[in-house]
Amino acid sequence: MRRPTAHPLVGRSLGPWLAALAACASSCGLARAQTSGAPPDPPGAIALEERLRRVEEVNARLLERLDRDRHESDRRYRELEQRYLELKQHVGEPRRDARPTPEDPPGQAGEDAGRTSHLGRPGELGRAPASGAVPLETRLADGFQLASQDDEFDLRFHVLDQTDFKLFTPNDRTFGKSGLYIPRVRVYLEGRLTRFWDYEVSLQRSLEGTWDLLDGNLNFHPSDAFQIRFGRQLVPYSYAWFDHLEQYFIAPERALFPLNFGLSRQAGLMAWGKAREGRLDWALGGFNGHLTGLADNNPNQEAVGYLNFRPFLHSERFPALRQLNLGASGAIGEVARNQAPLPMRTSVQAAENDEAANDASAVFLDFNKGAFYQGERLFGAVHLAYYHGGLSLESEWNFGRFQMTRPGLANKPGIPVQGFHTTLGYFVTGEQIERRTTVVPLRPFRPLAGRWGPGAIEPFVRYSQLNLGDIIFKDDLADGRLWTNDVSMVDLGVNWYPNRWIKFYVEWQHAAYGSPVLVNEAKGVFSRSSDLFWVRGQVYF
Image 1 (cartoon, rainbow, N blue to C red):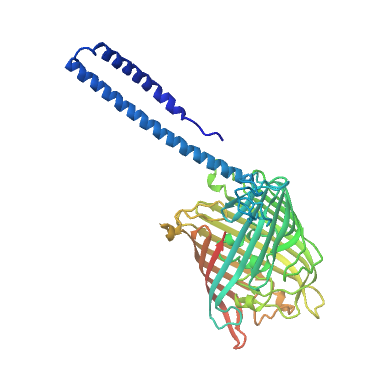
Image 2: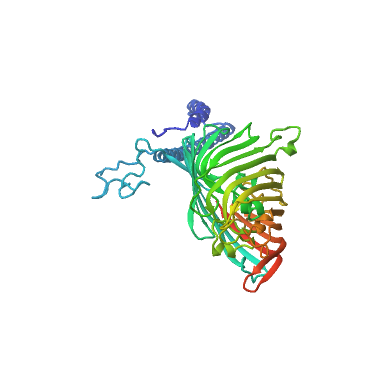
């Protein structure tokens, strides 16, 4: 860069003044030459001195302005030079040659000697990228992101951590003990490998205390309307499972049917998309049909389909109905190898029947030892969801039929099951939502930043119900003297979002049983209900 010699405004502003100054000086010299031989007229002399004084003042002001403009020009030049050097470094041009120079101390190669790039090779910081390397930008929103400038490649990193305090009443129980629990810790890695390929890898540590693969899939993305995903992923059965993740729930956990009969995550191949300008969400896939445990031992496949329609999404006539969701989903498959069923619970989703899961939730139905899932399985669901302003309404009816067996049972009886739930939440602090996603409080609570707002506050209520056929007791798959096949539950609470990354659930859960349920096995205590006071703290970024 060439250092500027003069500011362009200085020449234009000084030209008229210098011309006036020259004219005045000429007239003054001429006047003095004409009167040098005689005493000046006192009034004329006074006027001449006044004119000279004014010219000197103007000249002084012009010189001062010229000096000020010169300093401003120097400052702007230095800023531009610094910006130029920063841009050179950003695009990978070296600020100095990494080879030794006469000014370098012995043994030191330029200013980058001893420093390393992210690849760990010394002396490469600030060098131009090697062939095929892509410069990255960093961003922070709901997580950390590394992305290429053209958004062809990116990596997003998210963390979810949930901690529960649960107080059960009565507290002297075999299943459901008061205490602190960690239902989920998740690490998400997701992003893009060119515009046609998305990827997702996530790990989870749940109540069992075991880290395991949660999601691992690759998604072919030629358009939003048609995509193909293969690998371990969410199964598109039930709005409560497929529409949004656990960190966005209204209540802390899913309702009774999706909590106990949701198909969760499985390995499979799925075609899906968002079509008709966002009005239609669809999915159709084949999955391995695995239900419990960490390992897949089911060789047969399961067909699953999902539809969600927003008929008024772009309506000008009915703007209040734009976020009305109507849809259905279903699954059909077969369990070819025996799979041990998990106990039916009220407040925990777990893949294992271990001590931690049994302690963290009340149980209303536990199957007899030797009972297994085996045979055909069919599930369906119809859902309605509505979001408007600060209101969230979610409702779903689930139904199905599955087969079980046990040693000594000649046939595999089909067991009907059905459930229903509806959830209502409303932001009393004025936040407006169009779907369940990240909530950004209008007035966050950040005392260290001097912001003492209330955050976002969302009271909620949910009713859910679950019923299984009586044949489960008649064929001795479970003991009807100890457990119930009919339960209804009410969740009443409030969610507090101090900022977009932190959320607290505070709720009371009351479960009512159709018949007395074993509460304390050692003492032989039964109860027709259970109560849970529940506080959950969540961090997600």
